[in-house]
Image (cartoon, rainbow, N blue to C red; front, side):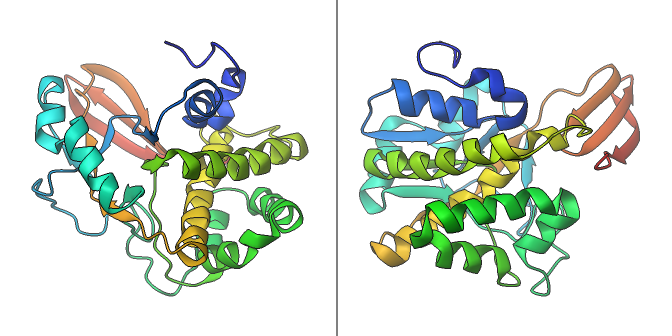
Length: 257
């Protein structure tokens, strides 16, 4: 099953990342609940997996055959959690790989530091024009210093909430895509709409918590370690690593340009 079947935006994957799978599910799947885990990332429904880092992404070594058992990703456990709350998210942190940024910086400032501020400004203008009921939540999420977010576009939510979120998400991002010029963006920065969606998920959830009294349930987020390459380069996020005999010999950040 591919996100290039049915009604889809798979041709935009280089810029929309995992959102092309979200769009496909929105347009082609009828389910009581929808969820997204991706790029070796999972939410821990067991509540027992030990975290070494309280304010950052935790990485663990798990055999593929043990993933469902270790993190309790079975249908019964997840449905039981959804009985408690119709939205399940990753536990909030201020920013992955940068928890030294304390209450002095806003999510708008973090985006401007790591990406291109003008793109987020366009998205803000679109939300003000098309979704005025979400403006208060948007401003609180983006401009309140020290606001933590649930990152990585990971969630499980009830059908009606998922459909409402997708109307907001794609109603915003597809218009932004028509306005934003990506000329000169490297492969990492070209994933712009995945980055912006991380912020918009939190805007939507905050709005629902205040407008409908829907409080999300939070689960710790883990990233499954991939085997290290024997030789060559590996790029994850904004970091490039070079290996020789599976030993890392170089690590560097990928710049904006």
